[in-house]
Amino acid sequence: MERRLAAILALDVVGYSRLMGQNEAATLVALKAHRRDLVDPRIAKHGGRLVSTSGDGALVEFPSVVAAVECAVAIQRGMGERNRDVPRDRRIEFRIGINLDEVIVDGDDILGDGVNLAARLEAFAEPNTVCISGSVFGHVKNRLDLRFEDLGDQRFKNVAEPVRTFRISCAEAGFPYADPLATCESLPLPMRPSIAIMPFANLSGDPAQDYLADGLRLDIQAALVKASGLFLIAPNTVARYRDAGIAAEDAGRRMGVRYVLEGAVRRSGRRIRTTVELTDVVARQIVWAEQYDRVLHDGLAVQDEITAEVLKALDVKLASGERWLLHSTLKSLEGLDFFYRGLSRFYAGTKDDNAAAREMFEHVARLQPDSAVGPAYLCFTHWVDAFRGWTDSKERSLTQAARWAERALKHTHSNGLAHIVLAAIDLLKRRHEEALANCYKAVELRPNCPTANSYLANVLHYCGRPAEAVTKLKEAIRITPVYPPWYMSLLAAAYRESGQVGESMIAAKHAIQLNQGDLEPRLILCSDHILAGQSQQARGVAHEIVALEPTFSTARYVASQPYKEQQPLKRLAESLRAAGLPE
Image 1 (cartoon, rainbow, N blue to C red):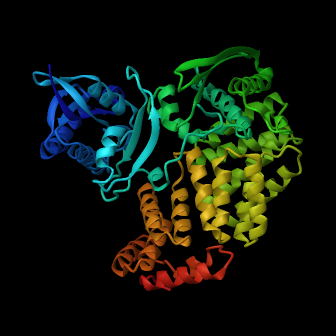
Image 2: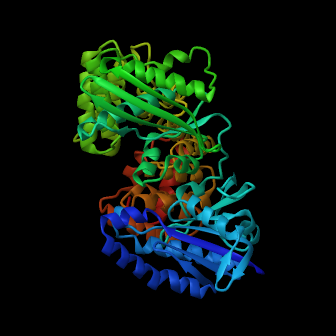
């Protein structure tokens, strides 16, 4: 048998079956165009040999490992440009795996463990990224100007030993900075038990019952978020993997958690059947499964039982006095129903859904006035309206938010949401110490809540503690790798204030990529360029800012920034004026 050392690249299309199911002809035409105009020319340019193709994939051999990685990154960045104006649900996106090993040559084909591992790395890769083995990393780490994320040792099917794995994230054209997590150092897997709760399936056959499955899952999530012994992935991140059609076990591995909880709910009349199972992603086995049959009025008991069983399965030791936090204070069947409906709409994340959720939570507050649940979620819906500009009167929304937050805090079992809202209002009023106190209390009550952690980072930043803000924001991003664009703007601002202008530029460009119409990251980038002595680049960004906001005023913007000290405000104003922005 002939053997030779080769760099092996495996490539396939993400969600190919889904795309073919939507429109078979259009998918085939688009894929052929991508192959003809981008993929095949890039392979040829970098000296690759196309070994084999399938309907949605390809296997390529390169004599140079550097050329293989350069080719993969060029393909991913090219696809970013080609997909720029394509609706997300119709985009053809690739994932790529690369390995360096000896292969067995059989005519034009290549075989062996090295080829198998390349295919496993490709299946492990996120969309628009490249996963490489440790052997590849060792050859290219000092030869290519790329950001590598160390994913640690990974076990792959039919591969005897763990494989050190690295990820290269490839941004869309014009932003050579990969996905936003690449701006943070690689974070290790949590030492404490870690879990992601997948969206529960509705098996009732009636879409109107979706809220019941969503509500039960989010209620369990809300209970577990308060368990300081757990590391819990945020629900919006988990939804991304369900929507992409990725198996729960694979989703858990990609989110960097040890356990995944799945469930399904079936309602028939007043009876509800809930099935749940807990999978150990590393061991690749189900460690616990249970089925609950209850009359609907006993739904609260189902939630409590599932939560307690998950904690038992994970062997989590709760801190003294924490166990009571795992139980809901809602005892009204009708109130529980409205709460589930409200949660389902609240997490949908649109203006109309937020308004609909508020109506549901108003019912909860009326039906169970002795519970903090209704007021806590009500204050949050009003704050979201003010924060996202979904209101005709920001002041009126903030007044309502404060009123409901104060009502929530009058109850014994506060869940931390009201503290986040009050911290936001305190910061706007320049009550920095009060804002910090409320944020610390929110994180104490909700240690796994990305909103609590990110808003603490926000307050730390404005209080002149940018290094702490960076650390806390990275914790929030680790909990919710799919996060709102303002996280990255805040990270950019904190980096700037800590003197890390280069890192600030990277984060600001990511934030622009995430939200093209947002002024904030452009303003940060503009000041970064001035601080770095890049006047010409700063003026270019300033022109973009004025184009987006013709009435922009430096003085008005600076006055809106609630810094505790005057020095950051002075430096910010001077840098924006130096870039040519109007006073």
